[in-house]
Length: 284
Ligand code: NAP
Image (cartoon, rainbow, N blue to C red; front, side, top):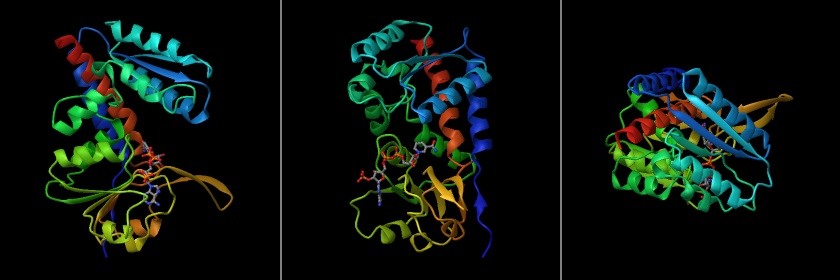
């Protein structure tokens, strides 16, 4: 059996950033990304810092609105409304999860669809499924770009996505359909999961359960996209692992490692979305 190909995220992510920079070079002003964070959840703090740093690194303007955990919903909505009206604000992202006293869907719907760089607004979700041009969720869109970057054909392929979240699984299903793949979406209620996943030419695991995908669940030579990020203790050390067992990678033709696979694509696609949003806002 030949060694599987490792699909590293870094070069594909760098390619997305080059596209963002190339769009920026045609604009009269730098795009400006606004990220709103409530509270001090360590994971959110670190994700937001990464987005801010990367934006600045490629020459974008970036502002982090770090608000206290007990910020009122009305205060948050006022800030979003101000940014919606600000012609210099190109992208608005509200870091999830939000504290329990805030109505998440109300907040996401308050962001102007034209500045919704996370692609979570119903208008963008509608455009995604109806084949229109919009802003689409970054991890899912990043995965498609990664497949293109590595020359992985999707047209006509059987793609099985395990996980149906609004953030990853569902938007990826829509984007895979747009690429003319034959798409199956599995979830926690799916029966005979192994039988379903064995039918995949491209198997995407987006669940958040370490080791869920075993070697028996993978067709030999399949492409595995492991989106899962799970913190586990291995040999006394904290480690990040995906949803797919290492032994299952060995059966694949190609796979994305964790860490270092899908991870870097999300932020890069966010910045590409911000550059695209700035360009479209200018064009009116
Ligand atoms: P989520 O909202 O918790 O959704 C998990 C999905 O997995 C749900 O659809 C759930 O089914 C399904 N599921 C749970 N247990 C299952 C099982 N035993 N068999 C089959 N399906 C099962 O998670 P998410 O936000 O989509 O994230 C998924 C993973 O991707 C997490 O590890 C997250 O950290 C990671 N992630 C990585 C990136 C990145 O940039 N690399 C970005 C986003 C997320 P039900 O719908 O039936 O409950």
